[in-house]
Length: 536
Figure 1: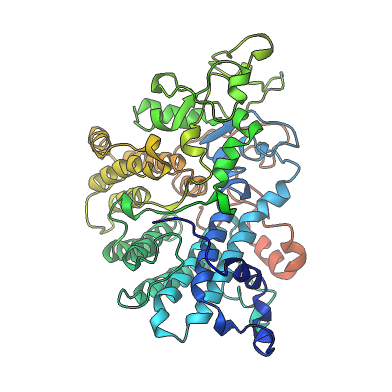
Figure 2 (figure 1 turned 180 degrees about the vertical axis):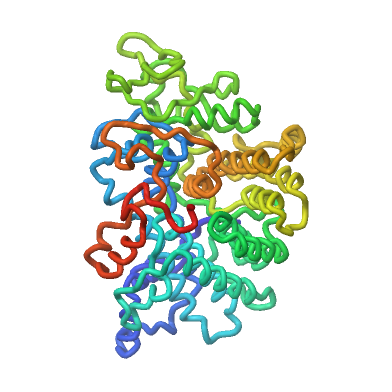
């Protein structure tokens, strides 16, 4: 059961994990605890949570990728409102803070995983804890490099050994090393040995960790289709042969625990009063679901009851009739000028009257009963995404078991079934999922048509799971869906959809020499529009 338990010693482990450079000193002081006295399992649960914390909500995806890739939209405007980062590529008052949070939290997660690995290196019975720690490191570093570009890895996480100014490995070097290290970690998993006792994702199920490892390998391999097709093919085929996710039951996610301080930050975004009012599904996203008569449309979206008060009342149920769902165009505001929402093409008008009038009352928002649960799931990687990547691999003539059409059908059905962890209101029956997949076969008339269809579905799937960063990364790689950039006054990306996040501002001072080398390798410098190596 993927429940976020609060383990004994959890707080103590967190406080000590943040100062791992002091472990050797602690070992020589009889009044303090030795590293040998720590249970490495607790580093796993803390590492998993820190990864989640750095890859959800206000720490990154909500305020950036959700709008960049046109899954969410907002009428927010002005330098003080953080949603301008995502919907209009305009800095808010805390943009510099926001853009470094994923970097900091993911390195914190990787550091905790590294300590877990160090504590289990000499214990053969704890090989699974060790291997999962190595997988967690790969998961974190891939997230960081895909978002920022070159970053420390070969010299990262070595502060105990005296390396405090690590070099930035090139992304090409990173992917080579990460794939090699991931392969070795998966291979060392052993179902006959002790299982982790503090695993928030799979509760110590080693068979599922193997599938996760190979599914992660597949995702990493497919990132390389433009930069290194041969390596992409090698590792995609290795992942397929090793065994990726077999059904939605294998999906990797964590159920949050708000009562104990571990809340779902996407839910917090949606249920914060100002955000609840101005945050909507993008027109691009809703149009895609509507045109394809996708069953998810009537499950994940709702239109508020009429009037300003109803639109601003958190938790007040709306209308989920798929026929009335309408996405908000990206790039508009409520300022009364040329970019006011009322000037958008096809503007439907508002709802309510007088002081109770709202100009955005007819636009669809995320359904609160599904996405507003502070104890709800946060997805990491799913069967549906994996099957869609295998479908593309098959289109590219990689040897991945089934045909592209079969993998695509599996992915489409799996995408609908993957919503069930959000609760009863989000559960779509297997019969409905199977029927929709059968009625929506892959267009195999041309390679381009197949790639377009697969990657648009990947975007919609990741979007409905609120996995915004993965949707953005796959859009960068594939070019689908075709998106029209927002061009808003004072945007920070030169009128293009951002391709990366600039490095945290602290890197220039804390690791200046290596930071400058990494920036010098970026065409265009440390900007939002520069491309990482695999984004060619």
